[in-house]
Length: 279
Image (tube, rainbow, N blue to C red):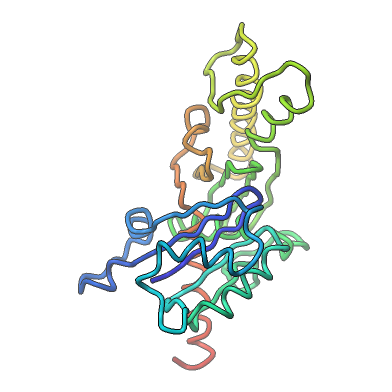
């Protein structure tokens, strides 16, 4: 069994992968199919996770059959992607107290991932974006644009295995919340596109302004990138990607792209360790 931990600003998601190939002789070579069919997501509010005991008590009801006599979980891999540094200590303590595995990985930008990082501060890149990029490489090898719709909307461009750069902007929920919290009369609204060029209701106008217009701007940026770098594939991911796909012109929607990337990161690390040890 593998556990993937995606620590985001709003939610922390534990992905539990009980790999079917552990129980059957037939091997699964399709990483995406394996993860999308067999990975179970447990989603918690990041602000409610403070200690290793918080994590253990949240997971125990779902993993009690995997707990050893010493209260540890026997795992094949434990992989972490974190953009919340203050929570990392709790995860480290959780690993120390409750995880029985030799394969512990923290996703980060590195020089040996097969990517030419065209930026001096690439080591400061969020682990979530690194995982997204690796997931896209695992699926499509090269030449793509990733748009991740989460708390923030991030765009990352890979061309000829070079990280060209990208952008960071507020996500749909942040935009809608800011209008609600910073004005006297504007309401909270459902996150969805109107698919119109104008709206005549307050709710519709907020949706048009925060979802449609944002997505149309992204469409324009994608076209400019393609004009410069060629016909790159466009991949959408993140919690609001299925909403954005109604407006964004894309080639694929992969909500679990980050988990696919975390899986691929662990594979790269294992291969690197095998080379070092001569295994």
